Image (spheres, rainbow, N blue to C red):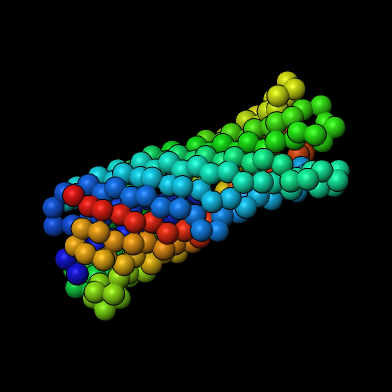
Length: 245
């Protein structure tokens, strides 16, 4: 396999890196076929099902270094106020990530590895209309540093595609606010991400990726005397088409 497709998930974002015989640029677009967003911990338990659309651009140098930019967004409904007898409310989610990394191919068996570091942002908007509460909308904004690594394992020397796995950690910050004037920042926030993917090269310049990725973060908005933790998890099963130039 003279060209490697290395797939890894960064939180709610899928990035595509390549080590090839020459520098390449790749573009991709896809959708989440089944995505879930959950809030919990010491706050309400809210879950939303939505279908995000993702677009991305990767530049990979012949040295194995790469840069990847990905953005995604989608909407659905959340059930956070069902305990008030309120119907499901509107939900919106957006993510963006800028990743820098390096990949290395073992030419004898086609197995490759990658390491990465980058910045990630996410924003969730949860409606609270017709609930009788003092606010009608709240937002949960996160941003921070992510880093990790992964591997790619060819099937039939790459003729039948490749399996990718990855894992990472994140050091995030969060701001939680509503439209009634409430605003708070998390004191600490840590979490992890993981992903599994299958990549199938349809032609030498076009391919398909099917993947499952997830991440989980715990944000501490309290203090030693009054702990208050908000837990956030996102998982997505999706499909992406890529083209390289």
